[in-house]
Amino acid sequence: MAEDVSAQLIDVQTQLAFQEDMLNALNDRVVAQDLELRNLRRTIELLHEQMKQKNTTGEDTALLDTERPPHY
Image (tube, rainbow, N blue to C red; front, side, top):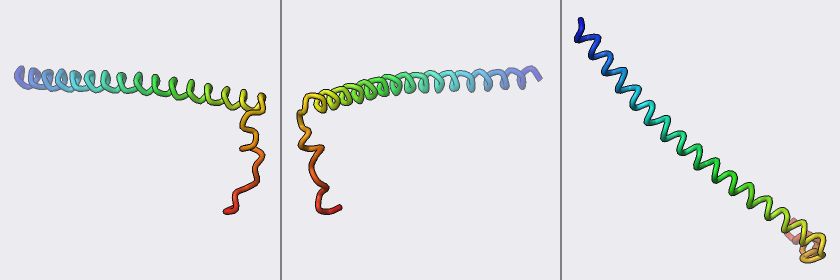
């Protein structure tokens, strides 16, 4: 009986160790994705600001005022 309880305890401890390992791996991945999302958002903000500046200074407005391409 004591051997059964001991074996079950070892199984539970083994499962817990694997779950902790998986949780740490998932946490690392989430942190990496959060950093990537922050970088992408910042890039989008910078591109948006550049577009606003070009539109207010009149640069590249010819591209916006062109007619539709013939394939439309």
